[in-house]
Length: 496
Image (cartoon, rainbow, N blue to C red; front, side, top):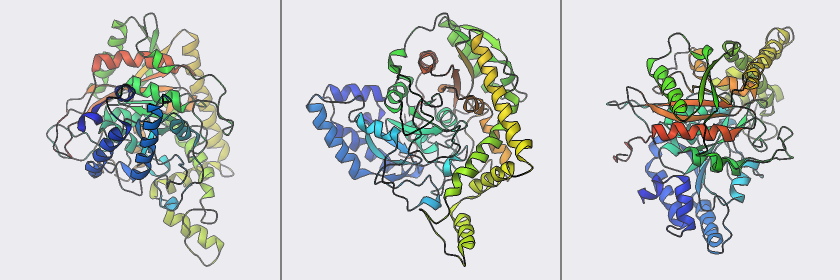
């Protein structure tokens, strides 16, 4: 059964179509793997019965020659996506009783194409975090460990459960959301592939909102090809989302393996920061050499306003969160804590329902939007955002096809290691990723190798708007040079 879970999504798809394995066998193998991996805390809800029903329906369609692009493929769903009739909490106590009556467009697209839902995956509360330690269900434990150490590591965040589940071979792919790096950073920490598409490429309908102008859904896969296959199903125009863009969805899988000869790849000089670990520097240089060997041209570029991006992000995102999370008041849905009057009920409900990090960001957001501070903080941050986007536009106008950068400033760290009481220490994990969200661009995280402690490190490719195909082509080059990274299955005693 373990062999069935170690396949890539593309391999499983072919095996299903060739009748080498049934959808039920594939689903049952992953359900067994999920049970064995409960110490990782990746899933917050296992939909075992629903998965077996969906697998049986997939078998009927496969027999009848009506298979969809993802027919019979078991996937996990980040707990930010509403799933009709299945509890959806955003990993927050304030939504612990919420069962949606509607389906998010992204998950509806996956079920339309035949995917099988294994369950809901853990994430930082309301997707606010870089380590998956803010979830009301407790932290996710990374499937990776430092060489010779039993220290439990974070999987990254906010989509930590999704990344850990894919890396640990608990599902063949998973959905994530990326507001400031929440797909790319955990993908890098877990040695897998994560794609943050162009803003507007995937519908936000039915995705619980954190920061509406930054949030974007995307896939996790074990390989570049797997991520490309998933994105084609997830993407598309949706009239229910006013920010959805009405453009044809590309054949992303066809881009995998396409020649990159003649492409111009930018290396932003501002990303070479003082104190950057030597392992990250070597990884970055090696990735550039790999692309150069494949025929790409490597050029230095400048993103002069990148140094202001992190500060601008942590003004814009909390401001939008303050507005979006105002709806959780104990009146309309979710948890309610009784009070003496309606104001007391509001206060008690939000105090009990929101964790410390969510409360912190709501307070920051409310402050920067308040009278007397709006111009000094929020309006200025939006101007910085425009300058960050203009920097990228200038690079692309000069003929640059994509930009290569590290995905994270370090490998995964231990659970609790950055809980010093200084939130800025945690926020710095997003230093290489937030620019992409501020500019609305696509970004692809691919494994680049292991550090001296045996932990995965990731590279990030940043592309032109709606040019995900180029990123998949370039990512495949790095993936072929690096090879697939797999952790030891210490939770079962098995080795990779």
